[in-house]
Image (cartoon, rainbow, N blue to C red; front, side, top):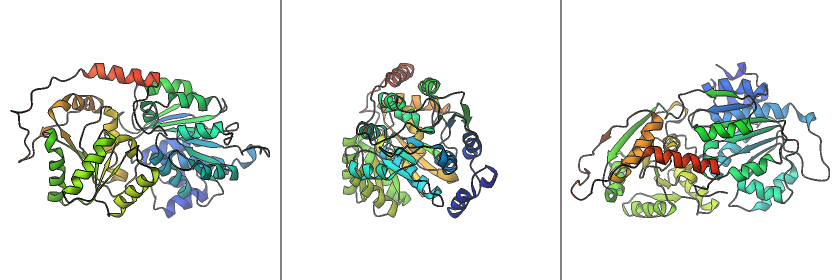
Length: 417
């Protein structure tokens, strides 16, 4: 289905055409008409399927055609018409850049606000007037406290990757923001994964939403090949370096669980002769931007990232993702491997499994509803004599604990702002 059949303005059609877009993806085909009709929607789609365009394009169309619907306040900040909330800075930047690209032929003004950088530049942008604001919850709350944000006439509210917002404990910030927005509004919830906590949140946020799912719920991208190598923990780094050298991979994204783990692994891989950088929530935004730019340009061959820092990364040519450690939250596995295999391209996701991570693999297999066959790579077989058998933890207990944490809004991630 072409974009011209979705009801978008000619200015937007010209913009997407200039970007090389021809056919709308399934999520775009279903979401764009529903949003243009004013419906609340709850949409699920794998990362890399055009999710951002699915809400950015109709929002730009609506804002550009409703200039007379908002009254101007000459005594304070100008009213914002659309607000997009994202869980991380990187995702906020990606969404903001999409709005700028798609809106290049319109007069819609878009601003971005997130923590880790000077607030003064963001204050200036808001004072100049912004129709659309892309924000992380923490920094938005800061700006609201300064009286710099006017949400009184908000028309559209978007929650992008809502599941991650709950994982990161943003429920209190979400409630605080909701108290400042009109009850009569359009609300859009997008996520790559759904669970009971997300459905519970949707009941409070959405009004008779259209449920849009273009793939089976909580599934990994079909164009991503998934491989699990069983290996001892102390040989994981060695195996990663071997694979990169043997396969001559020039761009590899490696996931770890902790900030310390990211720094340590990057340092050790540099010793292996592989130019490697790490990004995580403790690094400044400038350092993270520099590392990502170096990775995209090819100056850095390997990027080691925590889940929070990597959420929202858009690296078009990325072919290989490696899980140095499996995530504690199984849905994060889907987001991790979704960094590759984007826009219909093929990708490869390799997970390194140590004996004590079997229970984590079990939880991932439950949400995927499929088994991920385990194998050994010759020369890196696990030493069964030195690793005592570790009993698998109860997956159901872990799932209940995770759901309860989300419901209570408990902080379970890093980099809240």
